[in-house]
Length: 480
Image 1 (cartoon, rainbow, N blue to C red):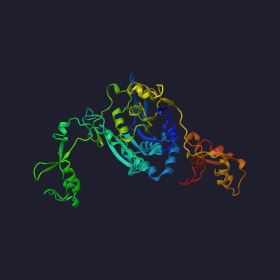
Image 2 (image 1 turned 60 degrees about the vertical axis):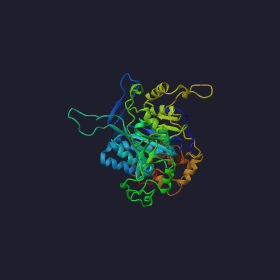
Image 3 (image 1 turned 45 degrees about the vertical axis):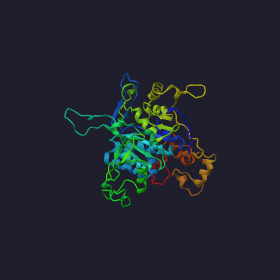
Image 4 (image 1 turned 120 degrees about the vertical axis):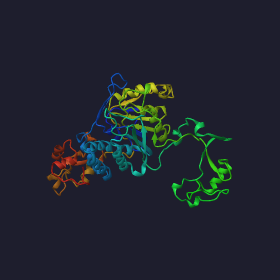
């Protein structure tokens, strides 16, 4: 299990991709992200609101996409890149650009999540179907857990002077995936209380209230010969049988959990238990109103994040929001005694995080146990560096290693690279296959030797682009 190399309550105000690339692997328990939706709109908080000054664009074109992202995705997995290309063929370059932007980041999110970790991706019908395919490719279809529909507003939705043109749009989608089949899911923590216990459980015995439930399986479930047995003279009315095996039914009877109306009529008693377990349709949480509202254009309610965090993490776990916006995830995590890290490219996010923590979180949660010293939000503008023992590193004798690996020849496709004999090591320079300025890491797999002429010509290009400009045919498996 990885050790987190970022302090609790850290907020990064910069691009989330290099930040996540600096996280140690397997160090985060839960990720919630509410990224741009490819809505083709520009958003801004109203003047005078707490979030005034916060703004972001949600329009996409291939000009927004860096070449090295495409190179990474093409080389990583055919399914990932294939899902992006197919979406582009269906819906155009805007969706292809958007999915490329998302995919390169989702791959990092999978890397930083612990084996028992989970991720919730918040989206809307604009791209939810394409994101579902992309998430299947990255996290694996077998690790898909739920498509949660959140009814954010009640009513018919947007209309016009010409009347309704479609059914009201009133919901968002949350795609819930785990990293593996063994994942944290504390279902007891999200049980909802009954609004009217007497109405829902109208009967009562010495053990308390209950409601009647048929002891027989619905006929539509099909035949179950092993559940078709006689009990106290009663046979199931359909070949689908009883709901439980004979031994379990007898046990329920002995504990008084069957209600015998007559010798031929029996009901199973259902007790209130812990409450109502939420389904994948969430209609009980509305958009932020009143004092909770900050004015941030896409603010999500605290109750929504609290349900997610309670269900998929434990106290002390690390929660990451790579598009934290107005800090709802950070505040919810703080209130629930989780560690948190937020990332947002908008500088306004720092003010919102601090303001909301002061306003909505118990002051005691922001104090150290020892000495009562206040713990402030840590603000960073640059990515962290991975510290894990097995993190890729640059070998001290890397030039000698590369010289031997390349058989003393230049990797740049020049005449020195074409000569069969080895050239002196002194004529070579160490080069990053992908430049550091484009996110290229400084470790062995991203390094090569070029002669000084090739290195100068390559400049700030990726190796793939450099070779393309020289007319060198690039095929999958070549060095980038």
